[in-house]
Image (cartoon, rainbow, N blue to C red; front, side, top):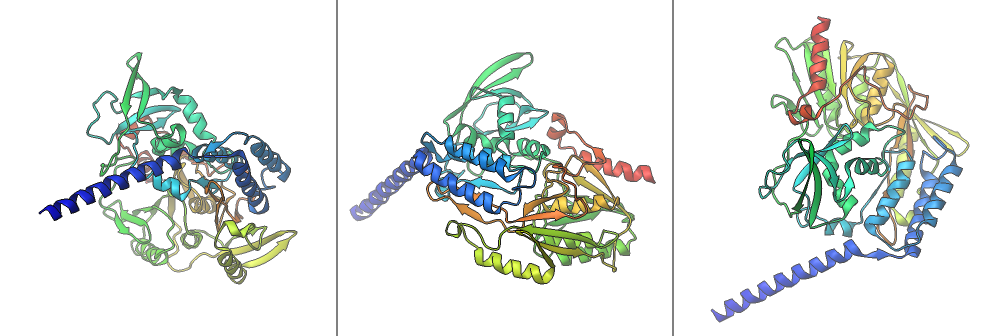
Length: 487
């Protein structure tokens, strides 16, 4: 018995010591400051890599503009900063690149220290609608009902709501001059950015509207485990049939199977060809007259998947071009995958047509219409600010064919293309922050003009706060209205 008690006490002491060490280590990672010399060294690497390989250089603005931008950024690094503070500064630069695929991420150590199961966070969730912040709900059973769902927030930790939203607009990466992707992020992930904005705090102080008065309220942040997420977005359709690996769901919306609803969550590289083969076979078999393609919140994925889908829908053969100014990654010691990149260039050369102009290599690929089960009836596409990358590729080509009706809001990606393809992560040597850097410019050959804007809907949909709370599906309702009106 004494032996067992000794073992128990030892385990207890070891456990307490481990937690103390973890807590101290976590705090050190979060508060550690890097000297101006270290920050400038990281910033110089960020600058060199961007100027050498980023496809946007010289596209929207001349290279000289970005040189000045980086030089001012580096000159501003005169004080020691934490990783969080430095990352915010890098995101200001990234925003100026007008590229939604370029981003900066926390180091592995910082991510580990801020594991959501071990860090205090806001139990209240917030959303943004019409440039205002509202309470979406609480994921904690401990919280009282002071901040009810739908309550308007005017201040968070002493910062006005409009200042918070404006600040987020300039630290969020987005394609071109598009703002719908920022609005989409604010609406769906606003609370996630609190640690980046405020750091990790023990409490959050809010000012909120109570009828006509402004009230104050402070609540404690919590370590929240096994919480049930607050439902957001249109209510899920339990009748949808899923191709899980292909990340698609579908069903016919009428008994005669004349209208199919196809929800593509992402352009998965897995099993997509097989899924499309089955889906378009069903459309042909039932002589379906309407296909509703839901690309809302689809952040993209496989270009081959997108090309396969288009091959069932486009009228004539189209081309797609990928451009790059590099044959190998610059400053290779700070990243991985250079060999894979070279292999991919060889594959592109075989699969497409390569041409070179000055320092740029162009790889042109063809998208040919399929003869079997080709769909040439009505197409309606649901889009929003979360439609990005490959979603915009599909939308741009369908738009060029004047074949589809678009419903929703401007897509998050630009109609002319994006910077993507291969995207290595560069790990900066001091802060260990990771910068994702695209190597290719993906050009939608059907949209050669630089608009710096997304695909615009034919029918624009606007959600009120009540629409979001009630989880209405306004885009799908509009699609069905158009189908019935046409009849």
